Amino acid sequence: MTLALDLAKRINALTFNDLPPEAIHWAKVGLLDTVGVTLAGSREDTARIVEGIASQGPGPSLVFGGSRRTAPLDAALVNGTASHALDFDDCNNTLGGHPSAPILPALFALADDVGASGRDFVAAYVAGFETECKVALGVHFYHYTHGWHPTATLGVFGAAAACAKLLKLPDDRTATALAIAASLASGIKANFGTMTKPLHIGHCTRNGLFAALLARDGFTANANAFGHKQGFFNVFNGEGNYDAAKVLPTWGQPWDIVKPGIAIKQYPCCGSTHSALDAMLGLVREHKPSVDDIERVDVWTHTRRLEHTNRPDPKSDLDAKFSVQYCMTRALLDRKITIEHFDGKAYEDAAVKKLLPRVHAAPYTAAQFPEDNHFGAEVKVSLKGGKILSAKVDQPFGRTSDNPLPASLLKEKFDNCAARALPAERVGPLYSAIQGFENLKDARELTAIIAGETRKQAAA
Image (cartoon, rainbow, N blue to C red):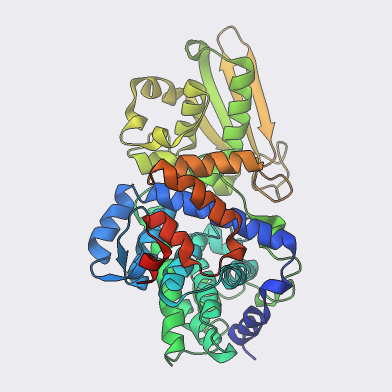
């Protein structure tokens, strides 16, 4: 039996009734966060350009942020790109990336077309989440450090698995969908800090749905697309740099959506900056140092994170999202981090330009954090007169299910994000619909709220 078929059997064996309450809870957290950031991201140029090119004809699937409906594959591409446009979507430690953005836009696009109950939708989401994370166990962290963008290269399997499950494909065709997805996987970290990074997500979301639809209609692929000598593992990681035996043993034990769980981002910038931001914001809110008194700022993060966040002079708003130096500067200046700090040319503010050269980044040493801590950060602010302010954080707040963000902060983030695209009277009903999502008879009720339609209009 091939890995693709082994995964397919597990995907299809999962039912909503098998899920513990914790998995259902975290699925709704992921839904809430992803819908919110997708709505906010729909207003970004990144999403608008993709929509203008890729989404031409009418269809059943909603383009988030308005009322226009288009073909499912086009909606998946546009909404997938929007979900990551702000780099504000959820994360997961096992995946080494963003777990929900590759899956949910594909499921919404498909459910708008074929219909699905809230329960079937949630089960498909959890199955896709589990698939991408368990494949990640076999390839990390070589896959990440080698330069692949796991959210896209692994997320395509999550999208394919979820869509195949929602389509109720038999085991062999679900395996085929995964095998097709192996040839559609792509995304390189060289494009971090540009519009192409969120395009990775739109592309893998569309490709996962595309793979499932092709498999449904009898398209063929090599069932051994993972383990073949020229298959996914050997081509993407190289011989000796993966362990396929790690993929299956922990399936559902526990569900990855439960533990380590979903990390909700408090800040709309690269997650690799968040530990340092937690440390810096805690420090400045307590001590309130005068910017004029700051002589030097030092920040230490894991070398793996610094590879894509050491950007001392960001050249664009997207580049600024990946600059730990810019993020530290904003935290010092404003004592908060908001979406507006990455709008337009905020990175060129005179106060930013004055302080930015004083911020220095370096990888932390074994004396600061254990090598297996990939999320720690230490900051030090040196003031005139010799006073030093310092703080350390082992991992960012909300990074795992063991230290979750409180419901009040989740709702605050959702409300702020949704309000960037929706009139105020729709935000509350949308929040309520997600809170009771598993009870929806038809998931199209949710996209109808976003579009400002009656349910009858959405089904037309």
